[in-house]
Amino acid sequence: MEKYSAEQIRNQVLCHFAVEGELLEAPSYGSGHINDTYAPRLRLSDGREIRYILQRINTGIFQDPKGLMENIAGVTSYLKGILAANGGDPLRETLTLIPTKDDQPFYQAPDGSCWRMYLFVEDTISYDLVEKPEDFYISAKAFGRFQMLLAGYPAATLHETILNFHNTVSRFENLKKAIAADPLGRAKEVQPEIEFALARETDTHVLVDLQAKGEIPLRVTHNDTKLNNVLIDPSNGRVCVIDLDTVMPGLAHYDFGDSIRFGASTALEDEQDLSKVSMDLNLFDIYTKGFLEEAGAVLSPLEKELLPMGAKLMTYECGIRFLTDYLEGDTYFRTHRPGQNLDRTRTQFKLVADMEAKWDAMAAIIKKYA
Ligand code: ADP
Ligand code: GN1
Ligand code: MG
Image 1 (tube, rainbow, N blue to C red):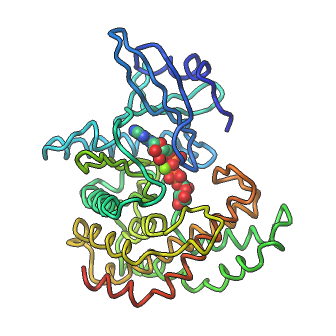
Image 2 (tube, protein in one colour; image 1 turned 90 degrees about the vertical axis):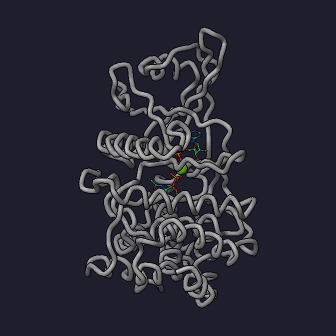
Image 3 (tube, protein in one colour; image 1 turned 45 degrees about the horizontal axis):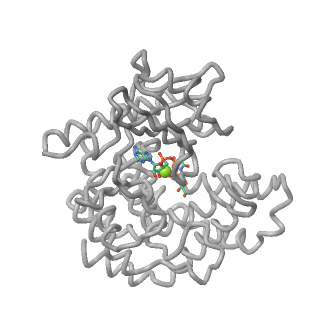
């Protein structure tokens, strides 16, 4: 997506939102792979400055922006109600949408681009790698609580913003199609990765089939629980769960698993030196403890027993998504250098292999907290 200058942001986008003040700057912001994020800073007439998060929604990926924004407006106002009733801070512990001048949750420009705006939650940190285990524990509680709080949300009103988002069987089919089409002739360079992926086809059915048979339930889940999708206030440990684009019915394993995939890794998602990449059992333990302290009461024994499978499958799924995107020419995930999606694929598969080696230890940790 084309980058907007501060002037374009001011004249083409910001002027349509219900905000006041003079725009001082509008830099790109954050390390998300999907939306285009800016952090405009404005000076108010009394001299105070205020920052917002302004995002151009990736409508190539989210094809129903209206439904998506309905989800976010509904979920954030629901969470604000709970926070207000329980002594929380509704302006800092969930996202706050800034409406457009005609009171809509997003602005659609004449060129079709869709924009939304949030209050910037100041004085928080979002990590791409765990620095202190305590922060990972805080994020585990945050995502566990998020799932619990949304247990009472009317799931039927949610739009499915990406179909089959965590359907590992359909993700596997997409990979096979990309291998067969091989539009850039890249398949020959990545035979070991392709073999690794294809060898695990049986696994792709485990959670999907149990859900289809009704043995594990659909819940309202976040579905993109990587560590940088939670903002932590270091002064008091309070959190704000962000990136709500994929909140929709899913399995508890998706949220648990995606957090482990990203946060329990000892290296960045695109690390090129694979000797640095492993799944840290101590971080797995810490996350399991925090997540089950919040969500454990409602999960069935079978759901709990399957949590390691959730971790492995979310990591495997992410690996095959990166590999598919690499084969298709890097059209889905934002990349900053050639080969980045292949590097991402390799870290995920290294983590999968490491989880397979640590399987019994993972199961024992789940047992300890279940
Ligand atoms: P993407 O889907 O591209 O990952 P996100 O919604 O996660 O987009 O936003 C990208 C980054 O912007 C986040 O990782 C976070 O660092 C930052 N961010 C998003 N919303 C806020 C907010 N309301 N306040 C402060 N920072 C935010
Ligand atoms: C994307 O939006 P972001 O950067 O938080 C992706 C996730 C992947 C993740 C891998 C909508 O997350 O599913 O797990 O990249 N989000 C979408 O880092 O596809
Ligand atoms: Mg994000």
